[in-house]
Image 1 (tube, helix red, strand yellow):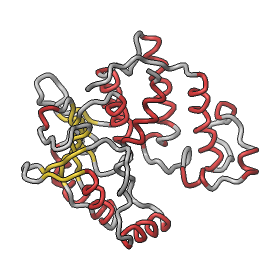
Image 2 (tube, rainbow, N blue to C red):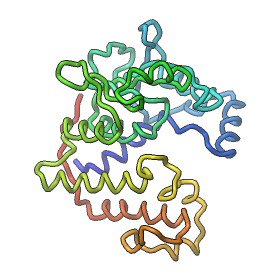
Image 3 (tube, rainbow, N blue to C red):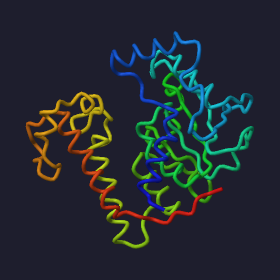
Image 4 (spheres, one colour):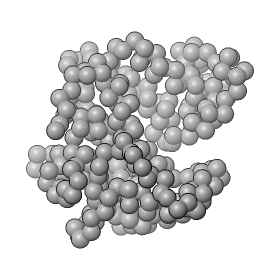
Length: 270
């Protein structure tokens, strides 16, 4: 299996949740969606079927209904849900005991995206506990460092939680066969992951930062594109625009995909 191709497909599967709106354009789009009679997610979707239920196990709703609820919220800071999605499950399934892993995060991609991509690429059943910003103040105290995401009950005794995006991603990659066959492969995979972290993820701070900003990249001019060097030829401190730095960061992964140097055979669940 080509790992990079699987991750590209998995990224589409994690698109159930978007980051909270941060620009006036995002807010205008959201208002237009509210005014339509049909939901944005009506029609044929490639998102794997998920069902959800609240912590008291009294309510089951579809992923489509969950997304509709999130889009009706004013913004991330107004979200009040505290429910769980069972991902890669069959229709009507609501038994969390069939899930291999349980993640906890807010209703957005951001810091949970790579761990979810790994689980989706392996077609692994997992539970995703979604905590809105409003109830987060109560849930916060139960996490290892008062931060999210968390991989719940990850140890053999099912009593310990693993915190932070990078350790979770590495743990899942190792458990599911994405972390190489020997030390050399693991080192190379870790190298690519750190490159992603320091550029596309802006060292874990945001998806719209000084190293990568998708909105700036989409607005790049032809002149800027022509004058953008390879990332490898840029100094750490430079005078290039955010759009140019974003383009250079993205091109690194284009080069990796063209070389197809990272290939791992992964047994898919199900």
